[in-house]
Image 1: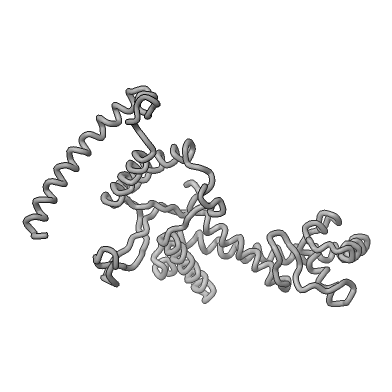
Image 2: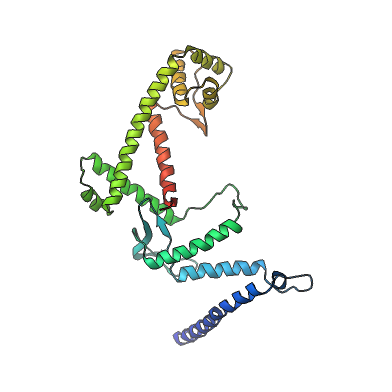
Length: 309
């Protein structure tokens, strides 16, 4: 198409777009003023609002959000921010459209007032849709609870790298929060909170190990419970939770005792021990506790952005 023809076509399409946008307010007024039975198709009238129109309106909304460059405002335990791609460079060509593909570097920045206002607008409407219309599961594939975008994964990787860097700096002996903040491009308050969380996690692991050692000692001194474990194991019990309920002792202590019994030949040796959630290879006591703590940390990272301010 010649440049002049393209310019003429763009002018006509822009004019038609303006006319359509100007009619949106009138269309909404009519839809809210008319009774629903006058809008929906009926036995006598085939014309009216249909599912196809809903799909089209949703597509129009999605297109408008992209064109106006709406940003997803994210939340950490400390601030509101936007994940932005900068320094974009051509990395390839889209084989469908022939247009160049650009990628850059992702970084976080504080959300602007306009972006916060837009986020509030979207939140109110999405919350209304979730409450009244959006199904609780993916009806095409109920096993899928939700999707994670590429940007969500990148954001999570950035968080993990920065927090690992903070941990390394703390372990190296640096205690100057301001210096650490510059190293990871965060403000001092954020670094202070993360540093405390890292230390608290380490303290919690230590406390859990101490509690577990005491739980093991208590179980070893309970001869009735020990004999009951042997009896249940001999009957084929392999669910540690079920055994814990039966003898009223903590699961971790029971697992440790079972490991000792197997090593001493007091009970039949098994390759795996059944625990809630499936079969896991046996770990030593400290590794097991660190494994459990790591799982809780991952869960915390995945949910903390959803916590209200």
